[in-house]
Image 1: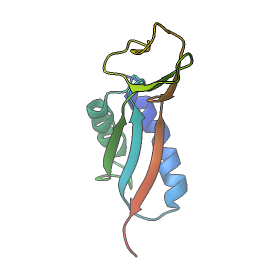
Image 2: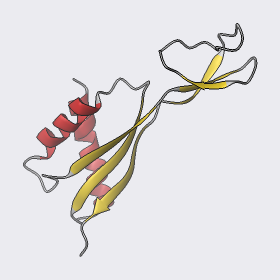
Image 3: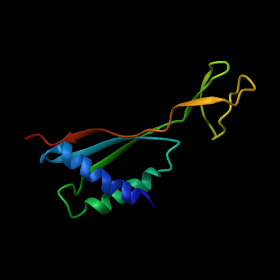
Image 4: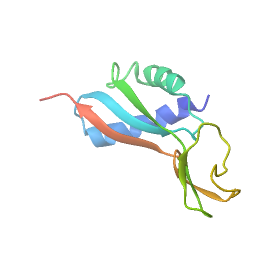
Length: 112
């Protein structure tokens, strides 16, 4: 369960950017190619924050589907399965253009 160590690292980033202000929500983006289970991440977040100033902070997860571009024909497609091949031509040389993200995109802070 690597989500626990990810959440522990996220705490440091959130604290740094919150600079002592109360955090209500942490918004993150997770690409489909990342081996992170959003429900497990949310559970681990509640565990690592429960006895800190971030207790009760909500974790909002936006899932980003995997998207590839064929280097042969240039077609872009969202992957339904983890088959890295072009549907338009026999090409199997593709670039992953979306779906590998893991970003904290914003913090929602309490008003002072």
